[in-house]
Length: 115
Length: 113
Image (tube, rainbow over all chains, first blue to last red; front, side):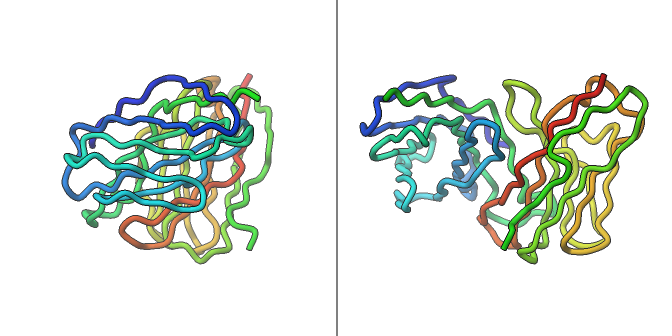
């Protein structure tokens, strides 16, 4: 499994952009990069995923380095509701057995948003 | 759709007691998972299932059992509860596909004393 490195914590002012980095230098060519977040006292929720190209959705953008060894989750305007732990998770993109869709969570980055 | 539902929300067990954590999803997803999350840590996979009648162990299966008799339900059984099983338990499901997202339930907070 590819290992990831994320900062333990980050702070942002409300309504400012936030860039959450993730290093995944051992990622394989077929691993997708998933981001999940976990709000306080809730289960994780899906944010975004990508393989090679940058991706956008209504929640965030995902910028993937050309060598795929790192990625950055971008929240364009942080709100108080974005305060959460953000997890960067490489996940296999080719089916290689019944367990291949499982997610491996690390400790993530705790994002605090300052009003 | 209710999504993934879990019961109970909270439970306190005495050492040696047993209980079943319930998980139900109404999205017709084939894959279901049980995770545990200890304080300040990420989630660890306990068991997973790829469909009715098929289950397999994850990273931390000791002390737990599962069954999957229907697509919708995936109960987690704790036998002989121990303080080390104090944790928050999350159930999740996903449809078959290469990069589909997992949908998580709200969790069950379990304390074993």
